[in-house]
Image 1 (cartoon, rainbow over the protein chains, first blue to last red):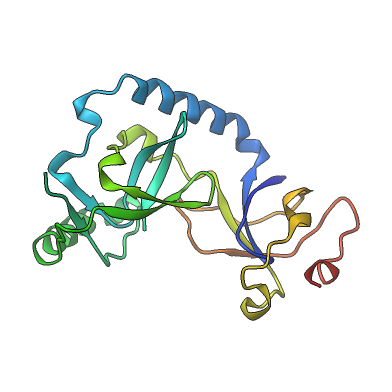
Image 2 (cartoon, chains in turn brown, cyan):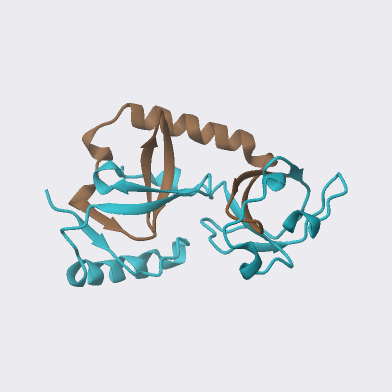
Length: 69
Length: 130
């Protein structure tokens, strides 16, 4: 079972597996724990941003994983 | 403070390619850095949407957190042509939960998987397109 989390257009969308919903909640919690204790280590090393690489950003009060496009 | 953005690398996040990727990024680091550019488009891998951020907002991801496969998995309904879809939103899709089976996803899959829609309610995919 998948829950639709984002509709891109009439034929394309993003789904979240219901099996993984708890895991997703756990990840959100881990991100929060980790980045709320923000240290300099979390800031970018070398000021280098690589396309396609994963990073974390703060989106409103939550931390989210992102990839640079 | 100057930032460097590395462009146009076809990155695969599977562990096999990590070493290759590092080598390529060194190359691009030298050739293609752009100090003037400070904003980038990022995609939320666990939600599917995108946003535009200043690169000072990017935080280094912890290794353990980066290896968890993306939660938002992309799907494309079989039989829907791109020309028909365009940017039309379908609210009916958003409000329902569907049952479908599919092959395993890799870590940060960006290719849309083609699926046939099966709902527990009778759902006419052709009608929803009108």
